Image (tube, rainbow, N blue to C red; front, side, top):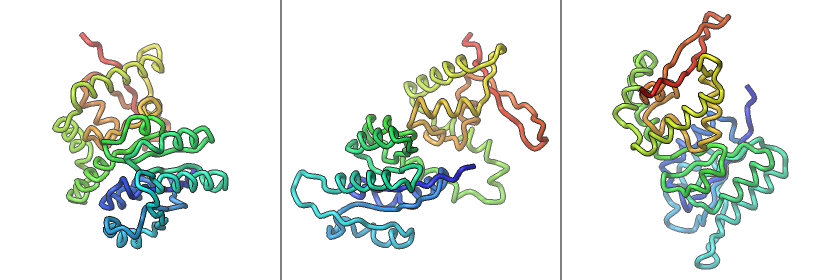
Length: 259
């Protein structure tokens, strides 16, 4: 699989230092961070919590003084750097970390240039920025998932993974509106890509689902993977099929009759 080179640009004014390790771990799931920069006024006392963690992860602090009240120099510096990196031709994608909507236009412009754009921020992040990214990850969810994983017994983790994630999804269901929207979207996609018997390849469903809902992530619903999440929704049938490789099976999904 192609290993994408990703520029990680962090808005320190709108992100807590407690998330930095979760940010870098998630980026590693999608590629290699070749640029790691964080923007803010490092003469400010409120930036003190960042200094130790930046050294540990080799993230380069980019100094931006607050010249004028009401003007965000940090945003401007991050945007200018992003465009410089884009034109250098040295990366395949960007990870923009902020809970601010000011980077909506930047995300759209990077995608127009063919870049993969991953957004990360807290759940308060405005919809326009989330929608402008190829995918958007909630920092609270990333932190919650890793903390739970660290508490599990390593010897039992693999065995209990499917049961654990399905049970977690049941205990932490999305609210009724979110759940209904997700079910409707999945049903529509399955209808569009299914064969004559109504079965659709789960891998293809997952790819389309992420394109239609940029902020979709199974972990938002308490499930580590797509399969246990769909099982918990109770609206679909899932079938495993053998392939020519005895170690590989493919999963298929079908809409369950509403009646």
